[in-house]
Image (cartoon, rainbow, N blue to C red; front, side, top):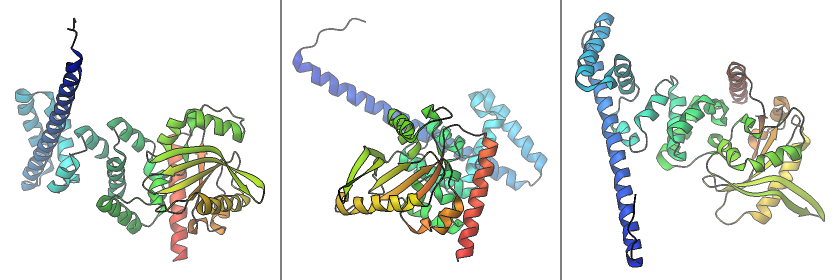
Length: 346
């Protein structure tokens, strides 16, 4: 398509007009999505209320089929029986209209479709609040759910009341806790490492795939340094990877280990954190946190060292993913062990 040459003074004008057009298109898209989502919620609520008037299960099936048939004739396949039942689920899971109105500012109908099948209310709330904070696309949202992010996040191993309080705090103040940030295990299958590799290989692969590593860590991590040098008593020490977390407002030191966790790793990380707190921390920041990534955690070591009382986190990582069934079984056992330890310490 032929374009006329613009006078230099008109280039800025056209650019400004294009910006206005794109902004308006986005606003229209957001408004349309909000209107459609509220329509689906109202349809789901109305059908559910109608079914509640007559408690016969057969009547419920009949009314959904009848309404769907008529709506398809008038408005198309969007109102199939399957979709109407999704709308009913939507209205039943989110009965509070004010909450729905608040969520549709950021959530599309497709976002809701991803979260509706989650039966555990706390797990569902976790994904909703984290999506709001990290502004996940629908694709990322589904990936996080499929990767069992909730089960891999430290918060899942806490008592139910603690989980609820942390998520409510996040909702009301946007203040995030370390338990909502750190995961166990971390999935590093994208690094493409072979069966045998060194710590240097692991570190090099992470730096080469830094963006994907940060995606696995979480959106608020900002990379600062590799092999951060610390000089203490004329001796050199090196932190493998140094990050900053925007919402936690603190430095994050990551130590990479190719073997299982060893008790000596704790004192090593304590030294790093003490140095960072004394020489690198600036006014307004919180104390630094250490993350030791190992090929195996050795949970009894971690319990006896009482790392849960310190600013040191230990997590497994996988360079090759196990099957979903094996991983889910392992995560559920890990959660059960952690919650039993909490009850024993009460």
